[in-house]
Image (cartoon, rainbow, N blue to C red; front, side, top):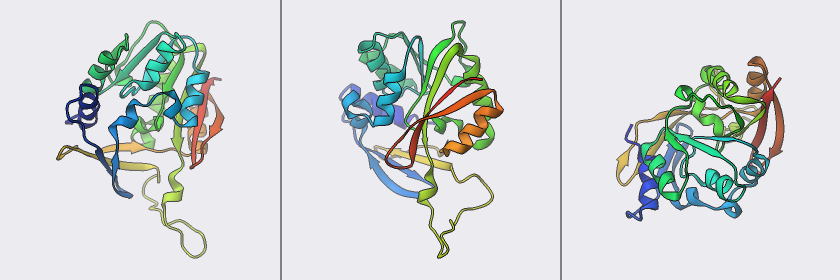
Length: 236
């Protein structure tokens, strides 16, 4: 991949003529996304993210940290020890420049730590990195292996059923071949187009079922204003 998402983040951090990102999915048309939004402070975050940060405690692992705004808040405002990881080299470099002291370029499935984490964060549609429904279990098993005895995984997502057309009887026009939350995502930046990648939105009941099947308790913490939610996973 070209790491265009990370390039936009690093361009913004270094004032290298950043432009808006263009995003597109298999069920939505092109839309502009301001890179500046990824650098928002606590007051500019949605209430689900704010709640997740307020609930964060102990040793924290921020998975898919992006521009590092969540990690920075926890590190500076709550004085927590945070490890931030992302698969984007450019995003990791931007996080270092922003002052995140413990940040690494690595896939969560390859991340190993002797020390367990009291809080594991996956925010801004944290289920997205699972890619497809068939991969959820291996990610949950990995996350569980990194979780301290009394730790918590705080993860958000959205039920995107609302995006599908209804017939006259109120039914939804959804393909029966795949789970409706499985999308292909395309990002464009400064005239370049990224390789399409899989991105997963999970409704709460599906996440809860997957969590229980993998030895985790799932609790609905908060619902947002637009079919989104924050969940807490803990050891059973």
